[in-house]
Amino acid sequence: MSGGEERLLEGNGANLVRERSIAHAVQRALERVYHLETSEPVGDYLHEAREGERETLFVRETNGTIEMAVRVPALGAKEIDVARGDLDPLCQLIEGVSHFVYIAERARAEREATQLELELQAEVDKWVVLAGSLARFDANASEALRARLYEEIAFAHDGEIGERYRVANDLAHRYVRKLERDYVAKKRYDGMRAELRRFYRFGQEEKLRIARAA
Image 1: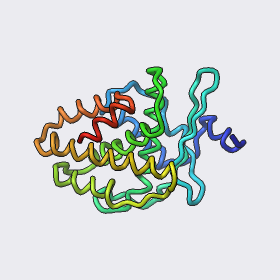
Image 2: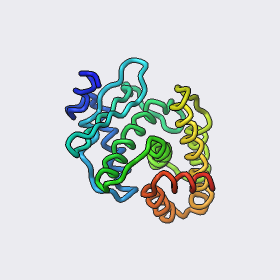
Image 3: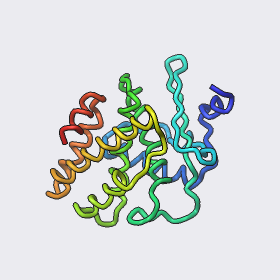
């Protein structure tokens, strides 16, 4: 690990005012939806990505303590239009927060988490967060959002990493489509939240089984 990466893990955060504010809102939304204990503010662990770099989570364990840092692209000053605008920078921020919260929760429960498990949950969390931000949410709105998140995309990585992202994207797409069919279309929102909480607490094997069967 380089000296720069060592400093990233000190938890002093970059001065990303807007990004830290949005990250805090995303963190609290995930903790509410999944009924999680409140973790340390993720904004304190955000750092600005280098030019051309995508969201990256840094993790290390020292004397039984998990240390993390999240590097994300700056969002800029432009207003974010969830319904029609470019969602990529915001989605990267949501992914980073999702990883942070998931690792913190797994560490608290003394459970391990695989990289595929992290990516799959982050893909689902993007839909959860963005669907909750829509002024009007119904089956049509969810279908449009789902298409933008899982169909109208391009992958930035090849090889093993790229394949992991593709698998996570495909499985999240299947699972969200099942949520639309079983819950959103029938306006069973309490049932959907219960299902999301159940899915969140499963490990990789059960998550994969449920998503593949969707």
